[in-house]
Picture 1 (cartoon, chains in turn orange, green):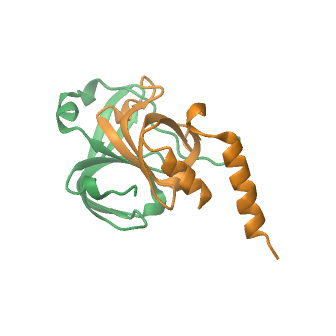
Picture 2: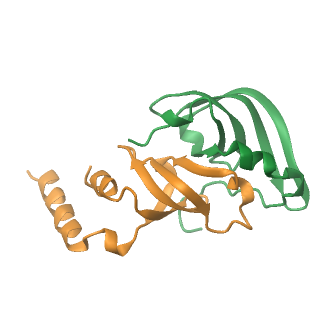
Picture 3: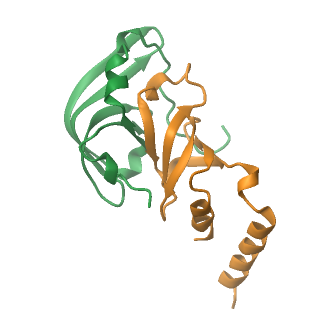
Length: 96
Length: 98
């Protein structure tokens, strides 16, 4: 749930999504849902010579389950805050 | 919410886990991202032959199999000459480092 919230704060940022088939897509993050499915606008494929398949695609929906990495701009996330939040979340879910 | 709502009745490109590319009109979907496509066509890419298009008709694709759904820009789509395009087919998905 925490990571979902993090992604919600990243809307309108330019991100690069690497999929589990090694395809990398850069675009503006439009929205995210509970499964971490991602909507990207103004997309471009990182190696268009090798992957011309998506030339006519301007925006897309990526299934959360096939995302390997999301590269986000370092300035868009407060690492310290995120670290604290993840630890707090971990502590609260492992309470006995 | 990321959703497929805006794509209904649009021409979309589906990329599946096994690397297949299917183009069709989005007739419906549900919250597991299962998708119904009408008038769909499979596009087979190969490095030394033109793109081959195979008509498939009406398809229901399980959400589990779907990698990506892209909205096709119909004008841009019409201007592309598929017979000139050469490319390796997309890789199927893999998990671990190899």
